[in-house]
Length: 67
Length: 342
Image: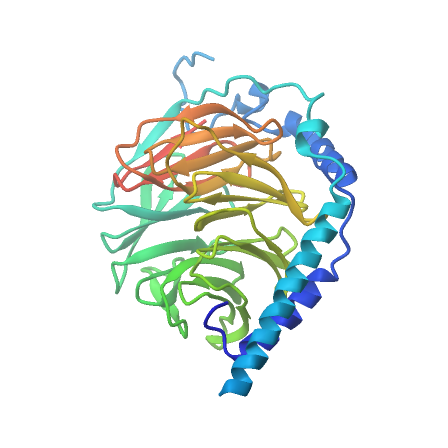
């Protein structure tokens, strides 16, 4: 900010006006949606569902695997 | 001169006013936080992963890695002057790309698997065809006036770059020319991530800000503050409604795009190292963050708690990546090795 010249400052003002105009939604709704979205994906997340890690591509086949 | 200075002062005051208005607008919609929303969510418990493979081959610090869309191949970049493409199922090296400049800082795989891009202190992004009999240089994208810190392909004909010259750029690979230049950061751009629908991307910079951009229009749509040092790593949530950032200030933060503000941060008094890289599990419930303390720490995204650690590297973890199928995580380090965990 300290070394901006006139054209840069004008652009900064325009950019801030544009960013201010963004239609913000209530966080009570957006955060709840986020939690719901993540929770729905957990059963399909291999790190959180051991069933999905059964065909582990990085483990040598043909050996006993301690689960 | 004096008239211009006065005009600049007036505009500075206008900017300060606008920033205050943005903060007011954010406070107005801040009626619920993540702690509250996730209080009913079950903990994930301890996440303990095993190291499955050590990928040895580089002779110097690894600076970057990127998974191919097939979740099997992966490309890594080291300051030994080489890119290596690995088959992670067998651990074999498939292709070695010698670099003109050894000072590489970024690498990317095109979704098609045909091309890889790299760049660093040479200020250029070089694109290689790796499906040819031997790797062939396709384009040298030369217009940035600072180092290349990150690059991501949209397709075989377009690529985004982030640079130490504080700008990001969208290039046309058919012509080798810049299509859109994204200017708004006032510090070196360190990382970028493309939204799943490719309409937006986010950038993290040394001005401690993260910015959301419209790929086609070039405008900065939203700016996220809160970090107190360089943002080195950034990622989109698979749902596209949130982003995660990692910084030298030792914190990671989640920013909600719809509410336009930070909703949770990931910080531990026992962790005093900067975050270098991060990747999300397929649901977004876990964050794998690489740190300067030689570890990759695992965070529960919703609870803000540390739930695991990947230890084994003998130097800073510089890059982290989860493939599209979500079946594991790769860490790359200054110790010259890559490790696969799941």
